[in-house]
Amino acid sequence: MGVFTCRTARARGVRGWVTPWLAAFLAVATSHALAQDPARLTLMVSGTAKMIYLPATLAQRLGYFHDEGLDVELLSQPAGVDAESELLTGFAQGVVGFYDHTIDLQAKGKEVRAIVVFSQVPGEAEVVSTRLPATVQSMRDLRGRTLGVTGLGASTSFLTRYLMTQQGLSAGDYTMLPVGAERSFVTALRSGRIDAGMTTDPTVSRLVHSGEARVLLDLRTLESTRAALGGSYPAACLYLQTEWLEAHPDVAAKLARAFVRTLRYMHTHGAEDIAGRMPPEFRRDHPELYTKALAAALPTFSTDGRMPDDGPPTVLRVLAASNANARDKHIDLSRTYTNKFVDQVRERR
Image (tube, rainbow, N blue to C red; front, side):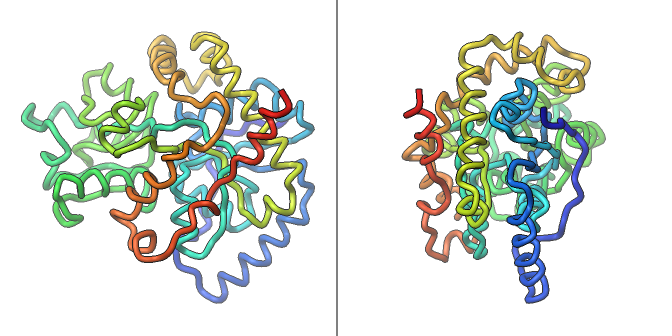
């Protein structure tokens, strides 16, 4: 069975600009990655403990990668922008992160493609410290405040920019501060470094339960996501470099089978059973709270891993609000995802 590793991988410094030296380095690294044993894989996860990425750990714990003849190592990187850096340098063969990075990278001249979509909602929530007055009732009321995101260039920053823009606020009307996720996010809110911020479960549920925060805007259900973003929003997914994908379609098919099998398991088993299969440190001091949050999240996960038809245009529109490249350059959404591999799984049933 593959190795479950919760250590944080080191960031590799790709931040949207590519020098000639770095371009050459990436080309060599990619060639090296293509030459490796394709059955031994490293997948970067944008925070293994985040509930939105639970299918990665669950597939590992259930032995579904092993059943496909794959030796998969999962490494945790709190911010999606850092996880994509590991992919571009060839350190990892795939990323379990937000779909919006496939669009962002195409705008920067890099081709990656999502092959399994986990859900149609971000699974995030904007929480505000209970130290703030009760008059803070909307994103607009966060003018002049410091807002926490996992990283600058991370999906939480894309969503925050869009939501604030929708309220008529510009980037100069508030401050975005990268504070990571989970414990580091909690510490930043608790210490007053941030007034509010965007994060996922189980962190949201723990902060609300402790009375330290309240939910200002919820993107954890399909109804609230459509109301805030104007459509379904495919977020958590597995994406791969297109060059690697085209060189190893058989391995990609195995990954897709393992993940679709996991998604089906999630819809045929209860939250208590699934929670019990997670590493103990994921549940920490409040296992009952974790299980409750998971039960609420389970209906938002896909049953088949397919990309929803209205998803990519919605994500592009949101991304374009804060990303000039996505706004000004032609983006071919058909090159950012494929349903080919999950459809093969469905056909084999």
